[in-house]
Length: 159
Image 1 (cartoon, rainbow, N blue to C red):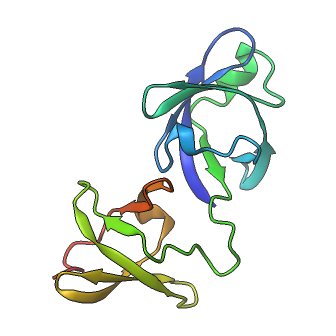
Image 2 (image 1 turned 180 degrees about the horizontal axis):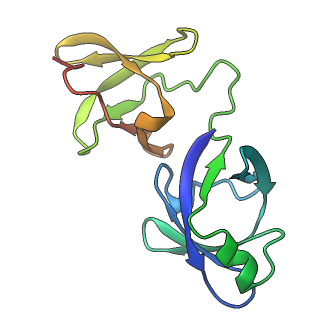
Image 3 (image 1 turned 30 degrees about the vertical axis):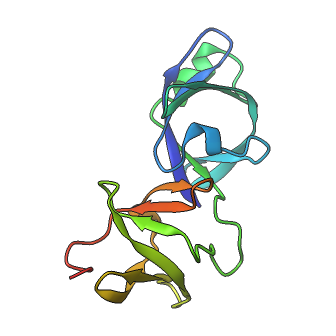
């Protein structure tokens, strides 16, 4: 699963939530798929009832089972997770552009090396081919429309 956002606060008396999204733009969220909030280490699924974008990285949403401001405030600070990468062997980013945390182009993704427990992207850079770990905590953004993956590339990896 990929952490896609965080509940900032309740919004309104009917249980709506202000959510800031980090790894995925609000417009890229699949509203038919559940999101998960972990309670005592267990992921609990929620479905979107409504979804209203607020700028580039926030949205006011309603989730099933969250009925009032008190319910919403209990979720303040909770992370939202999604089964963003559904492919059994991992995502296929072949042909996509890899960007670093500043948005600078790193190279073109030539494939995925399925190393058990540590899948890596094979990236064609100006200095030749390199492997970049495909770890959730390094993913900063996924733009399916432009086929761009933005990651925090570990320092020295591209030298």
